[in-house]
Length: 349
Ligand code: KG4
Ligand code: ZN
Image 1: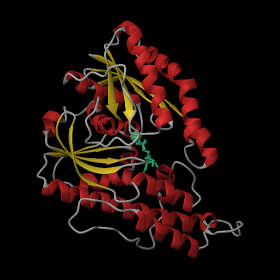
Image 2: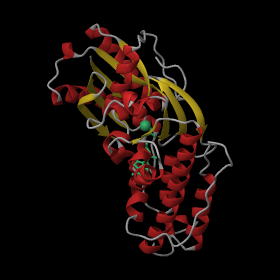
Image 3: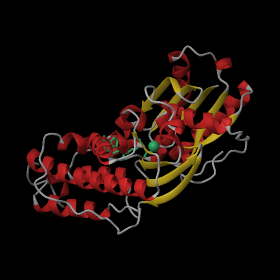
C-alpha cells in the first residue's frame, strides 16, 4: 500500500509517501520558520496562509521525488489534530479534494500518533511492533506536548503521564527567548550548550511517584538566574549590556541538563513500572542529542528513536500512521473535521 501523508498542523507544510507503512520514498518539508522567526514564534494566521500557498507544490514535489504518479497513490492520510485550527483546515480540505478526485480512501490522522509512527520509518531496525514488540512505552516530546503513553497495539495508546504545565519543547522555546537565542529554541539551546559547562544546577520537578512532568519551575529559575547574570534578553527595559556568550552557554547547558535528566529518569522509571518491552521516542525534542544519548544509556530495554529529521514535523510520519489505521479498517468520510486539542489516546479517524 502506497500512502500519501499531508501535514499542516503548525509551521511546516509537509507531504510524504510511504510504502507498506515502513518505507518513506519521499518526505518533502517546506518550513515557515524563516517567516515566523521575525515575530519570535508562530503566528497562526500567517501559518494558514502559507499552507494555502504551499500545500499543492509540496505534494507535487513529493510525487516527483519518488517518481510516483497520481494513480499509484492508494490512500491519502492527513493530520486533523491537534494543532492550529486554521492551519489544520488547509491540509484537511486539500486532502479531501485530492482523495475525492482520485477516488481513493481518506484517513484523518492524529499528529501525536504520527510522531510515534516515525519509529516505523527507521529503515535499519526491525518492525518495532515485533522487535522489541508491544507493549511499548512512548515518550512524546513536541512543542505543545510531553506525554508518556503505553502503546498496546497499532493505534492503541493509553496515557500514563503528561506535563502539568509547559511541554518540554515549550520549555526549550521559552528558555531560548529568555537567553536571547531565537526560535525555535530547542536547537538554539542545544547549540549554545555545546562545549559549555553547566556551572550551576537548575531545579528538577520529580513529582513523587507520578509519571507527570512539570517544566515551569526550571523555566522560572532560568529567568531569575539570567536576570541576575545580566543576560540582555532577560533584563526588563532597554538593552544595557552585551550578552556574554560564556554565561549564556553555561545557563543553556544547565537548563538542557535539567530538562533532559527529568525526561530520562521519569521515562525509565515508567518503563520499569509498566514492564514494557521497549521505549519509543518521538516529537521535535527527540532530535536532542543529549536526550537520545542519555535515554539509551539509562534504559535496560531497547530504545527506538528516529533520526532527527524524522523527529520534527513531517508528512512521512503521517503516511506511516495512516497506513496502520487503514490496515485496521479505518476510513474518514467527507465530513472529517479538525480537532485542535486532540489527545494522543483519543480515537483517530
Ligand atoms: O514535534 P515538533 O517538530 O512540532 C510540534 O508538533 O510541536 O516539535 C517542535 C519542538 C520545538 O519546541 C523545538 O524547540 C523542539 O521541538 N526541538 C528541539 C530540538 N529540535 C526541535 N528541542 C530540543 N533539542 C532539539 N535539537
Ligand atoms: Zn509535531
